Image 1 (cartoon, rainbow, N blue to C red):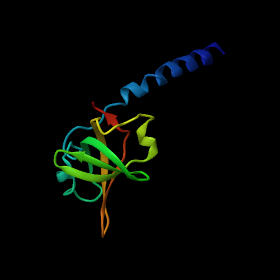
Image 2: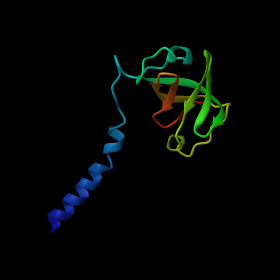
Image 3: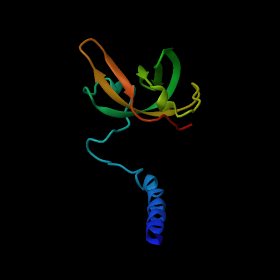
Image 4: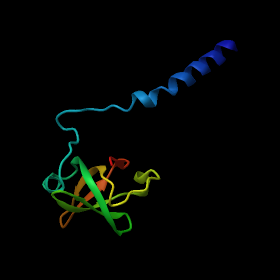
Length: 118
């Protein structure tokens, strides 16, 4: 019985350490890179990229106008990626987006929580 309790406590202590260690990731060729909105428009379908700039306004529903020094795009941000944060046009944010090219249009879908840089 004591061994089971000790094993459960040890497992619990180790399990709380895993999220801190799991924050890393791959850096190198093929990894999402920071690009401008102008560069984003030339990426292929299903490409991932990171953009930094401001969310200017809500267009409709989950669609927002995003602006950086090179231009503006329409991004789709699902509610779960706001993380309860309040973002204004004065904030500088980092978005990880996936390029979704269809026959008639291109969409940019946010795939990770919004990071407020400033």
